[in-house]
Each structure stands twice: as structure tokens, then as C-alpha cells.
Length: 619
Image (cartoon, rainbow, N blue to C red; front, side, top):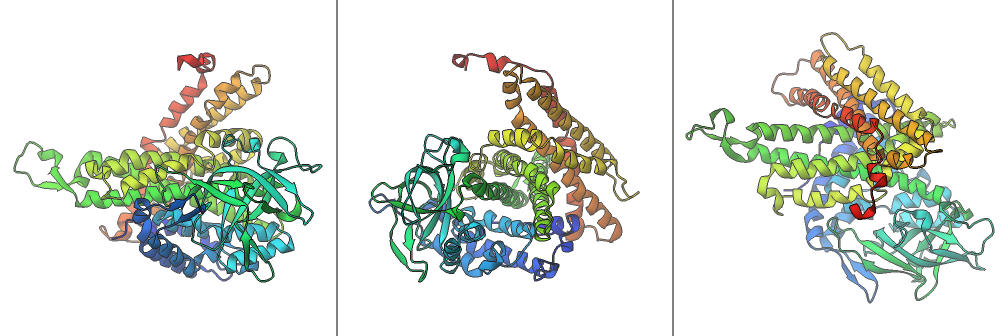
């Protein structure tokens, strides 16, 4: 049996019952994908994910790629290659690429729903299958020759990578020292070392196109310190004859190490060395020195991807735990604990297990709602752009939500997987007979790559709130407050107490923002205040994430309550229990989690310079 458990019912409930994506589907520019087609796509991908895609998840962990330093090559397990080919052969990746490359126009809300299914079943496979998405970037931003390269990437199914991090720079991208020197033939020679490059070397495709940030050397107006001095280059593993599409000689980019990791082992995380034994030839993307802005299109996608991976893993972790709790018989009912003759019951009947399962359910479904809500905002960005009138408010709201999706989503998923999902299995969760131990190991990276949680907190506060003047946050808060105020349909939406809790938590989160903004403004004359602000931006990230997830869960509960009132679902039917579960999850989250935002506000309210003044030796 497959390790993977999808929750197609919840995905479709959020997409259609709550977010009403049927209003987008079947209409320009998504004429060819109507709601029926969307349901069919989700159903087929769910089957593929649980079957061929999931088939190599465990074996890929147990038999990671073999790296040969003599040939700088990495060989992947045969069954993983079979899973990869099954996904590529199915062709659903065409939903994400430019129509000019043969893609099928599809709203982001549906593409991210599809992505959850694939990532939950085998996340490393999704990373390796990134070639078409990178081809779209080259096609949209590139020169005519680079557009031809993009076409070859699609035709020949070449893979691709994003290459930012350097050994001493880490997350400080602007400290990168890899250089690019212009050549008479229009190419550039790159020199340097990059680290932590996902899918940097493998044998899944005949070529890999690396998208590399490097610092131009000796070019007026193109250099300088920091990120503004970086340009983006296309550096193929093998040089290419663009006319025939045939591969030429090996380029001077080599994998010089593959990391040994805690989890996600089948995904090669590489050190790449440029120009060590021969020139590493690259081409400036679009012939413009605009590297960090170009790469941010990839970075923002990657942050959405990490958040989706986090919820996908938590969801299947929860569903595995739920299945185990229904089957594992241990101990009597608590009301008969003193009766030695009492029958033993499934552990789902034990109160603390029920508490744990509801915690898992609320976070899994709440984080899914956060991802799909953010994707629906991206729908509006895409639609308004296609209409020639970009929606600046939607762009700003998407920017605000991305650090929540990535930072909040990865933190909550990792913690709940380790403290609740695995715990449900007891000692069995610690052994490899069940997938939870691998889920936990694979999930930790989500809080680290594409910007750690601390970086997401800083980004949320300084860039997405302060720099934006609080505009997007104000719009989001107003929408939440409108929901809190109602009106609720009498006799249908019995969530008055939970709405009140959401209102209080929203006010507390707004207080945190106001306090930090005030201290940041005062820091012009008292620089040390920035230490207090910076030390609380992660706290803000988590508090604001709780508020948004609480709001989305209560929106789901209100819809479910209305549906129960409108349709006479028989008690005990799957339709009835699904909706009762939606209401219970929202109430549980509102009562158990939302009050903790007040504690976050209490911690931020009074300035404390204890840590700022503490000598390093005291730690």
C-alpha cells in the first residue's frame, strides 16, 4: 500500500465551495479548463500520485543517489527514475508552462492544488521536474536564442536549477563572489563555487540548464556591491547546437560534492564549481543586467512551493496517523480503566489522542486553506495582468502572504508532524515501518531553505508591512474584521463565540504590528531598538499566521454550516461527517490557538534590552 494519503475532498471544498474557483475556470484565458475538467485533473493526479509517483518515496530515502567524484556524476535509483518518467509522461506539467511552449493556460489555484498531490507523494520528484517551469522563465525573459533554448528544454525534457548560494555567503545573496567575464562571442565565462544547489547533478535528463547569479567583471554599469550588482546567466551542463538541438562538449560546470543529509536524501544537494578545469560558458538572460529581479520570480515561486510541500507532508502525516489511530487497539475506555475485564478499544477513543488528531486536522486543513487562498490571490494577479490592467492590491497582498505560506506553514507543519502525528504512533512512529519518521526528517528542511523562518519574519515586517506602508495588511485585516462582524445567517452559522475570539486575536496581532512599527521609527535615534524589533518579527509571523489560518478555517466552517442547513445530509454519511469535521476543526483552532496571540502581544508590549546587552560569553 502507498504511504501517501491525499485529501481530495478538502482540496475541492476549499477551491470550489469556499473560494468559488468555478468563477475563473472555463473563462478567458482559461477557456479549456472548466470545473468538470478541473475535478477530473485533480482525480487523475491523485491516482498517479498515490501510485507510480509514491512508489519510490521510501526506496529513494533508503538508496540515495551515488556520487562519483571522478566523473562528477550522480546516479539515481532505477525505481525513482521510473516514478519520474511516469510523471513526465503523464504531461500534467504542461499546466504550468507558457502557451508559447505548448502549455495549457491554468489558474494558479488549480496548479498549486495539483502540486500538493505530487509533492505530498514524492517531494524530490517535483524538484527534479522543474525544467518546464525554468524553460518558461527563459522563454518569457530571454533573447531569441534563449527562447530557442527554452523550446529545447521542453522538447528534450531537460532539467534546470536555481543557483544562488555560496559557501561563505549563505542567505546573504549579495555577498556572492562568483564572477562572469564577457567574451568576444557574446558568451560569458563564470568562475566560482556555489553550494546547496538542489538537483545540481543527476542522470534523469541528458542536460541540465543552470540559472546562475554571478557578478559581472569589468563591465561598466553592471557591477557594484550587494544584490544589485548580480546578473542572471544560463549555464548548460552540456553546450548546445541551437539549430539541431544536439549536445556538444561538456561545459565547465561540475558537481564537486553531493551533501549527506538528514532527510530528502534522494534529492541531490550539490556543490557546483564553475571554471575549474575549463571555461564555464554562460549567456546573460535577456541581455540585461537585472539578475536579482529576474531570480526573484523563481525565489517567490520556490517559497510558495516550500509552503505547499509543508502542508502536503503534514496532511498525509495526519491521515496516516488517523488511520493508525482507528486500527490500533490498546487499553480500555477511560471510563472503565479500573475494570480489568473491559474490552480494549482503538486508541482514537482515548481523549488525548482525540485532542492530538484534532490539532493535526486543524493545522493540516488550515495550512491548505492558506496555500489555496494565496493561490486565489495569484489568480487575480494573473487575470488582471492578462487583461492589461495589473491589480496592484492583489500583487501587494500576494507579497504579504508569501512569507506566511513559507515561514509560518513550514514551522507549524514541522512541529505538528513531530509532536503530534509521529506521537500518535507511539514507539512505532520512531521506526521505519511507518512513513512518519521519514516525513519528519524530510520536513525539517522546509524551515531552512529558501530563507529561514527568521528571514521570512524580517521580510514580512520590514518589506511587506513597513515598506508597503501597511497597505496590504490593512486590506487583509479589514476583510477579516468584516467576517468577524458578520452578518451570520440566523440558525445556520452558530460561530459567534469563535468569531469573537478571531476578532480579539486580530486586534492583538494589529497591536504587535503597531508596537514594532513604532519602535522601528524610534530606532532612527536609538539604533538598539532595532534589536528588539528584529527579535520579535518571527513572533509576529507566527501570530499573524495563526490569525489568517483561524479566519480561513472559520470561513470554511460557515460554509459547511450553511450546507448542512440547506441539504439534509443523513447523520453518519460521509458528506455529513465531513462538514461536521470542518466546523469542529475551526472551533478547536479558535479556542485552542487564537488566544495564544494575546500572549505574543504581551511579550512584545514592553521593551526589554536583556538580550541586546548580554555579553556573548553569557550564552
